[in-house]
Every structure is written in structure tokens, then in C-alpha cells.
Amino acid sequence: MHGLEVEYYDRINFVYLDVDDPANESFKDDFEFRYQPQLVLLDGEGQVVQQWIGPISREEFMEAFEIVLSD
Amino acid sequence: MKLRIPWLYLVILGMMILPACSSQQTPAATREAGLSGEGLGLVPASTGTPVEASPTDHLEIETDVVASTPEPDLVDALESDIYPAPDYQFPTPVTDPGSYPYPSPEQASPPPAKTALEASDPASVNLVSGKPTLLEFFAFW
Image 1: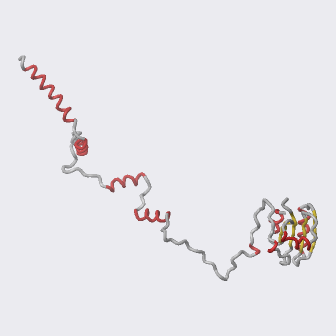
Image 2: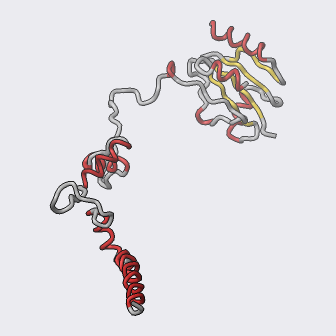
Image 3: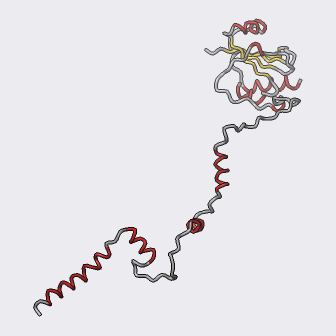
């Protein structure tokens, strides 16, 4: 994920939320958090484009990034 | 005849002792004699008092061997650069009030490589900023 952040830092916002932080309870409810790691890709308007639970490959991320950036 | 022989011995002995006594002079007298050449029995080139070495002669010799000696004014200036005066104020950067103080997003530099996961500030999270967002729920354990 850190390598993707370096590559897409100027086009995509990367947000890391600690599930043990009480301040993130609203986010967990909004996106129906189940277990970590859980990743949610949102467009510029805050709409969910895609969700992943568990380990995901780098290529899968890049493919999703290109789709959301092309829109 | 018998009486002259001992006297002869005494005369010869005196002639041997006298030069030795004359060589046991004081160091100052010896130095002066050496400068003037008298102690060595040298004849000075010119009559009169011996010429003393001037301070510049010594520097001239040194300059031939070493790089030119900086002038005293230049030395002082160089030393002042090393240790600025106490009342010296370092120039403050002049910023244009109209200029954007922070680099534009297009000019933003990439974030440094992270060695550990860092949680984002929930209060600063903006999901409708116009840019796509990848939200990751994680735990440190």
C-alpha cells in the first residue's frame, strides 16, 4: 500500500483508520466494517466504487485506480 | 743559560694559554663578534656599523616560499566572517503576501517511504474532496 501511495499520492487520497480508535466508529458504521484489513475505494463524490476484505494484490489495486481515475 | 730555559718554557706556555683565554668570551660578545666578523677574523665589506636585518626582509624571504601573506586588513575581514558580530541579524526571508505559502497540489512532493503504518486523523478526513479516496481499516495488533 505504501508503494501505491508514493505512486498515486497526487491523484488519490489515502486514508488509514485505526479500528481501535473510538473516533472512527462512524466510519466503521458507514462502511459496514467487518474485520481488518478492509479497504474501500471512493470516487471524488464519496461514493463507494469498490470494497475489499483481506489481502489484495498490487495489480488489482492499480486496475481499480485506473478505472476510478478515468471517470 | 740554565736560568733562561725555564723562562723560555714560561713564555711558550703563556703564548699557549692566552689564545685560549681570549676564546672564552661572553655569548653577547661572541655574537657581536660573529656578526661583525671580528671573531672569525673576517674583514667587513664596508666600514661602519653592521646592517641590521629589517623586518621586511624576513617577510620577503617567507613569501618566496609560502603563498603571499594576506594583509592585516584582509585577515581581520576573514576572521570577522568566521565569527559574526554579536549584533548581526540574519536576514529574514521576504515572503510575498500574495504568494501561496504552500506548494500547489500539482507541485506537491511524494510522501516519504513509510516504514510503519500511520493512522490518519479522523477529524481531517474528507471523503468529498473531489479526488478518489482509498480508505483502509487496519489494526496495529
